[in-house]
Amino acid sequence: MDRLYSGMQPTGAPHIGNYLGAICNWVDLAERYDAVYGIVDLHAITVQYDPALMQERIRTMAAVLLGCGLPAPEGCTLYVQSTVPQHAELAWLFASVTPLAELYRMTQFKDKAKIHQKNVNAGLLTYPVLQAADILLYKGTVVPVGEDQVQHIEMARVIARKFNNRYGEIFPEPKELVARDARIMGLDGQAKMSKSLGNHIGLLDSEDEIRDKLKTAFTDPSRKRLKDPGNPDICNIFTLHRHFSTDEQQAWVREGCTTAAFGCFQCKKVLADNIIEHLAPIQERTREWLDRPRDLDELLDAGTRRCRAMATETLAETFERMGIASRRATTGE
Image: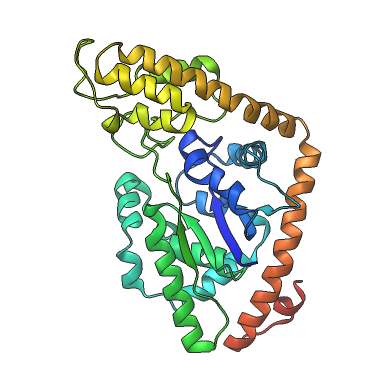
């Protein structure tokens, strides 16, 4: 099978945007590809964070992914990025063939530089180089991404091409697999769902938290009064109904909204009930994993061992082509 690679930063428990846009896709793709999924903590340190919480966040991320049905370790590989040091080594080698001007043109760098004005570090700029190393360390050929990450995969292809042209063919040029529903709008209706913007519903949120967040969620702006008819097709709440509500419930919401038969409160109540019901088994399975830390560590360690074996082989070949082969590269010591 073709090898697929994807990663997710450990910024705490994922939200329903991560779930609908990436995690569900990861579970499905694991049946069709040799899938390698990383908890990419090296990427997470490019912005300010609390080191004391990092290990807890890594553990929670792993437990949630498994709680959502990720079939590790038999059906896919799940590991923590920093436990495979070859990621950082290959990123440095790739930096020697990466055009600086291309990095400055990256849209996400510009966006993040605006958000993190007091911490515009080299890691933010070279983020796509490390991402290319993540993928190509395992010679991944397929990368599931949202539309906002397509430019990064294009950069990975540029890096692979330039390296191959200079040193000989080693790395495949990966192709993006743009996920459907990868961009889930936040509850504010203004931006993509994000924990940093506080416009999200977390996969581990309590029933009360989910209901409270939905009560104030943005809806169709034309519904200023109860008697005003709305348009579900432009309502962010109705978008979530498409994922969590039955066809019959969606038809009921559409009818009631367009005829002003009821208000947004009733619509949100049904959605809240459905989200709570959908997340309940995920939360239960996640708690079970968190209550078994030794089993969770063993599963991640198994992923690390497999990834280190692949990474050692790739790096040895890379060093040899570059004329800097070393005992460490060939033995993994």
